[in-house]
Length: 155
Length: 117
Image 1: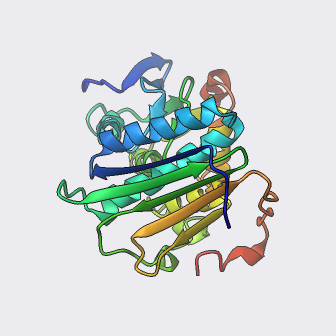
Image 2: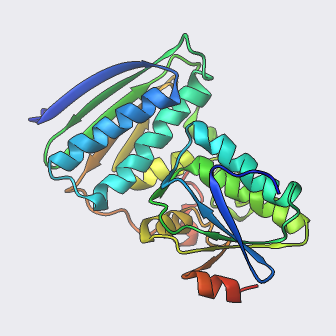
C-alpha cells in the first residue's frame, strides 16, 4: 500500500537512552508541527518510548557496539515506525498478560501491552528483533475487552 | 534522611507527601535513580505512609510503573500504606489499561489522598 508521506526519516543510533530520547523528541516535534494533537501523541510517545527501550535494554542489552535503527513516516492520518535492534530477538507470545490477577504484581510485561493499546498495529518479525507499528487515525477504536474473553490476548 | 534529587518530600501529619521533580518519568538514566530514591524512603528513612503526588507529571513509562509496583511491595511489607494522587487523565488511563488501578489506591486530590490514611 502506498502512502503520500509528508515526512520520512531514518536513524541509526547506538544503544544509548539519551540518543533515543533525542529521536523520540524529534518524532514528537514533527508530529506536533504537522497537526497531530496531544490526544494522539501521548499514546504514540508511550508506544515509541517502550519500543525503543525494549530494543536498547532487552534487544541490544545496552551494548554500545550494537545499534538500533528507526524508520519513521507519517502523513495527516497514518504514522508508521519500524524499530530494529541487533539482539537475538524474542517471542512476543511468551510475554505473560500483565493484567491477569496472578501477574498484577509482577513488575514486567506492561511495555508491550501499552504499545498494542495505543497503536493500531504492532507486528514483530519472526526473529523478534524488529517491530512495525502503525497508528491509523481512521481506524475504529479498539473494542473494550473488559470481558472475560481476553485471556488469549498474549497467547 | 537520604538525599533526594528526583523527589520533593514533605510531612503532613503522619503522612509523607512525595512530589516528583521530573515532568516525564522515563526509562532513561533517571528511572534507576528515581527508583532508588523511592525505595530509600522506606528502607533508609523508614517512612511508612507515603502519598505520591503526581502534580506536574506529564508522562510515565512502564519502567516507572514497575518501580511503583516494587515500592508498593516494600511499603506493604513494612506495614505502611501507599496512596497516589493528582494523576493527569492520560496517566490515570495507563493505570486503568494495565489494571494497576486495582493494585494501587488512587485519589483525585492531595486532600482526598491524605484522608485515605
